[in-house]
Length: 309
Image (cartoon, rainbow, N blue to C red; front, top):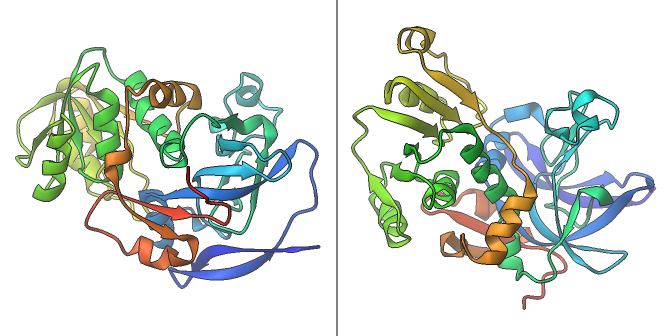
């Protein structure tokens, strides 16, 4: 059996390792990374989130090694038999594997694989735009969880908070709240309202802080009978004061991966262009340097087949 190489976790630090390449499976495609995105979930996994044993990475645009086409791919692979899979939503299959997160080696490697049915052709998009498909799909999923034309506070001025702000700004009155003046200044340049004052009561609060304390802060900033959407997945959870949920009659919603179709429509139409959030593009070999980047928004990694357009 052949070997594959990629970035995995050891002693809560990334290291380059070799792992056996699985036997060929009908219906699966072998892929090679063109560009990958480093996200908050990757950083949390280095802290122990999901206790994953495998190669990291799930935000990607890649080349199908058999067809040569440029693709992105939905990261959840379900069992195919349960009720959720039968209705076409493997995100909630209890037996699912998830690229670079749960039971399936990720894209920060020499090669990786996904079912062909999970792939979307993006030959018409430059790689630095197509690579945003997965995180933008997750950001757009918030739209499904909140009332239309809401006044929304997005808590968190990092990668995810910025993307959620961009995803919602045309359909809601959005303010991004954060503690980093230089980040908020960049978001204002993209047409977003921002604040460093974490006070007042909001009808909708979206938590995207990437911290264990973020959920509690979101509850405290939501007005009675409002909605709190939790987006962060963290290695260390914090207890919530559920009395607030009861007394204030709040609606608490979790939101995770989203559908690729709406994200690709938004990217192709130009309605959402996240490329100004890119801080740096490094080689795959520089992954340790990428995860140490804390001052901005997005770091991309050039994979083995990156050529640019």
